[in-house]
Structure formats: C-alpha cells, structure tokens
Length: 412
Image (cartoon, rainbow, N blue to C red; front, side):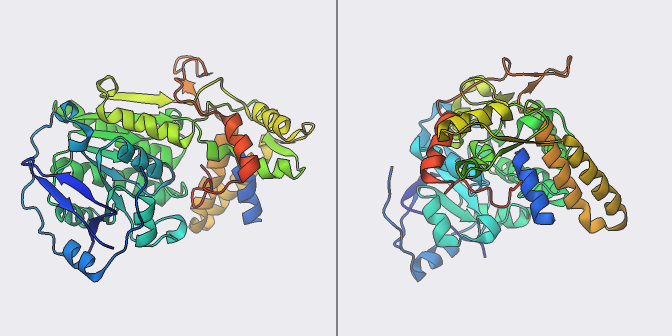
C-alpha cells in the first residue's frame, strides 16, 4: 500500500478549509560519452512503527470539492501544491523553493527514487524536507489516485517536473506524456485549478520522441483550459541547464582538449541554473501574468556557443585554448548505421534515438526559434535570474561536479 506522510510537521488544508496537521516522530559532449560506452533547516526525522500505522490508516476521501479555486488571493501557507517529479533534478529545487516561500507542498515520489532507484524512503524524506511526501507511482493512475485519496485534501495547483529518464522512445511516452497526464487527471479530480508544466525549449523543433510526447501533452493541457474557464496553465520551456554544460570541466582542468562539433558555433544557449529555474517555476504558481502562456526562459547574460563556453573554461583554468573539433558527419554515419540495424534488431531502437538526441544537441540552439525565418534568436529569448555559467564553471573547478551528476538522463 502506498504511504503518504510529511517529512516534518506540516499543515494541509481540506476542501472545507479545516486544517489537518500531522506530526511524526521518527549536451553534445554527452554523445561522445555515449559512443564510448557503446564502443529553512529541519532536524533529522526518525520513523517508528506507529508512524507507518498512522499513515496507512488515513481514511480515503470519498469526495473532494472541485469548485474552481481563487487560491491566488490566499497566503502561500493556505495553498496546497502537488508536485510530481519531485525527486528529479529540477524537481528537488522546485520543492525546496516552494517550501521556502511557505506553500503547503505535497511531493509525489517513488519508493526507490534517484538514479537507478538508489534512494530509499528515508533518503527521499530527507531530500524533500519540509514537504508532505507521498510515495506512489505516477505511471499508474489508479495507484496515484489511491495514494492522493489517503491524504483527504484538495489541491490548488499541480506542478509537474516529470521528464523521461533517458529519452528512449517508450520511456518518453510513458513519462513525458502518460505519467504527466495522470498527474493532470488526478489533480483536476481533487480541485486543482492551475497546472505548471516544466517542458523544454527544444520542442519548438520536434524531431525526437520525447519532444513529440511533451508537445502532445502541452496540446491537451491547452485544450483543458480552453474548455474550462476555471482552469489555467503555465508551460515553462527552459534553455540548457548548467549541469548539461559541465561535463568537460574536469577534462580541461586535467589538460585534455575541449571537444565540440563542427566549428563550435553550431549551437548556442542562454544556460540557466537550477535554483533560478526553480524560482521561475514557483513564480508561475501565483503570478497572473503567467497564466495560459508558453514561457520560454533562459539565464542572465548573452547566449553562448560551445566555442565561447570552451574559451571561458580555458581562461578560468589559466591554460591556452585547445579544441578538438569533431565533424558532424561522424554522428550522421553512426545514426545511419543504427537506423538500418533497428530494422533487423528492434531492440536497438533506443540506441538509435540516443544518437539522434546527441546530434540534435550538437547542432540546434536552445533559443527562441523564429518560425518565419527558421533562425534562432538570442535577443528574443527571455533572461531570468542571477547565476552565470562562468560562476558555475569556477565552482566546479573548486569543488567538482558533486550534486550535478547527469545520472540516468545522460543525454540532457
């Protein structure tokens, strides 16, 4: 049975506005890696048997008020926010930011979360401290609804940070579309009147399965809002994350060349830090100017090409620039071979998709795409936040990539 309980003291608000309190004791460089492979603080929580018994005995709610909410007029402490994808790379930052701003956060997590299920329940509860953690399976609608029913509360907002673990064909449709839709259905049944979706700026030019899956859900989310005036959405499409650009920092520090495809000017981005992105996503919970909008977003400063990123990195380490330029044709050849092999060996479908993902990020900019000209525009790509890529590189040079591991999402 799925269990839902808070990682510390938290107050949830029922549909009848009664408080229910619980206390318990208790980027392109990644394609090269792929080819190589192929060839406010809280005290620690202690959990007792009584904790689990109390959690399991919560009475399922038989009826939840789904009347459109005027939650934006409430204080954050009176707003219940359901977060799915809460243990994902961005989801963890979003939960932290929501808790910091005083919202009542209900975070859905797998019983075994993290890379390859490396985190158990205790680790997840510690990671999501301040949130009410609900262990469930978002890929199974019945399981998710049973878990949420056990809380006996309604939700004002759903925030989805779900993302395919690896970009594979089946996983993309299972997570980016089906699981995300499950969170919409379950949230709507329990009163949610706003949905904040973490998408990706690259869906502007959909050539990959995970992009198509994300777009299909975006379309259905927009349709939901068109058919119900009491429901709204905010679709956030960020540019590249800092972690996606940090894979070569240690290599350059050790005297290795900086690897890039073509002349290093094929793709550019306005990278955004994870805390800055989380802050923008949480802004969407209450900001009326972000209602029913697709919101592309990048970090501060100018757009940077791989060549400029490499030059910045060499300057920080105090070494003369040394670049290894890889022809795009090598990727095209590998993808062509894999596409042909898939016809004979269908099990290679994901390997072929990974190759296409690598090529996409090697040649396509993560910026606003002008549909009329087909060109990417740095000027039209909004900026947000204060964290810069240069500061991130400097920190990684000092402290390493701990906490920035790509994990299962090796291509993102």
